[in-house]
Each structure stands twice: as structure tokens, then as C-alpha cells.
Amino acid sequence: MQVAALDTIDSLADGLSNYLGKDQVNSVRRAYFYAEQAHDGQVRRSGDAYVTHPLAVASILSKMHMDHQNLMAAMLHDVIEDTGITKTAIKSQFGNTVADLVDGVSKLNKITFSSRAEAQAENFQKMAMAMAKDLRVILVKIADRLHNMRTLEVLAPDKRRRIARETLDIYAPIANRLGMNNVRVEFEELGFAALYPMRAEEFPLR
Image (cartoon, rainbow, N blue to C red; front, side):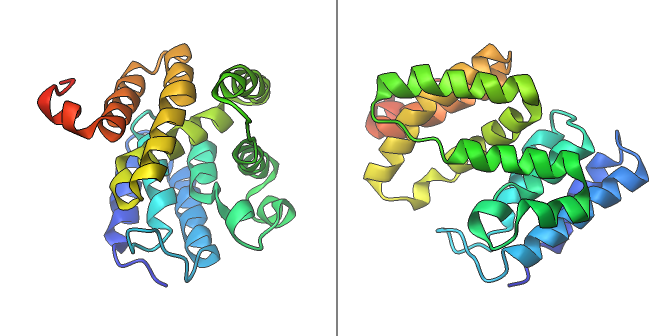
């Protein structure tokens, strides 16, 4: 499926040209088109082409002026997990660093917990280990969760609540630790709205 909004990658590239070199911007473009092909036929629950999600994740990171390899990893972050493409294939196309970042995000996605207490303790530990290796893995995961929270309304209420609670328990504290105050606040506002929609309407956080 060809994503309709080709201008979106163009507008992202235009913005990136303000702080990245031409070759770096072209590398981000190439990662986008690779992801588009890899996710061909896949759609989000909203009905949008799946590639709109990694594009949005990269856009979030671009507003933080992240480097081109971080943005490429954002474009490709679901490729290993959701398609038949391997880390080796990504390495051959985009190099070791990008492949390692994408693989790191895929490994974080596989972490599961039996309780909220375990999630908070264990996830911080695992995240810290990943952070020590390359902080950019964590940044992709945070941007991924932020876009998923922004599009939460397409999910069933019980799943919305589960994701919102996980976001408040795990991702908001991580954003806080990293000094990403705007992201932390947005996580808290979106999480509160998903858990307590009527109270959120009556008492908006801002």
C-alpha cells in the first residue's frame, strides 16, 4: 500500500534540512521508503497505512533535533518485529549502528512483566542497560509510545486503559529521568484522559 501523504516525508525532510546535511536527510528518506515497502499491506487500527506510524515517530524525534541515525532507526523500528526482514538485512542497507538501534528497540518490545511492581523495577533496570549501550534506543521507544498514546482513541476501552496505565507507570518516569519534561507532561495528560475520561473533561490538566 502506497501511503497517500507523500508530502509528509517531504515536509519532514524540509524540516530536517535546517539542522542535518543533505546526505543525512537523504539517508532518512531512504529509510522511510524502505519501511514503506517493508510494511506494504499493513494498516493501523485507524485504517491508515502502517508507515504513517514510523514516520510520526521520526517526526517526534526530529523536533528534538535527534541525529540522522536515530531518525532512520525510528523509521525502521518495527521492521524486524512486524515483517520478515532481519537485522542482517538492515545492516547491509543502513550499516551497523542503525541495525543495532532497530534491534535494540525490538528487544525492548519483547520485555513482559507479571505485575506492575515488577514492571517498574525490572523495566527500569532493562531500560538502564539499554541506555548504557545507546540512549537512542530509549528515545525511539519513548517517541513510539508517545505517538501510540496520541492515537489511543482507535482502541477498545480496556486496551486503552491498560496502555495508559503502563505509560504512567513506566514511560512517564523514564521521560522524567531523561529530563524530557514536555514528553512526561503529555504522557500524564493523555494517560489521565484515557483512564478517567469524564474527570479529564471536567478537570483538564491544562
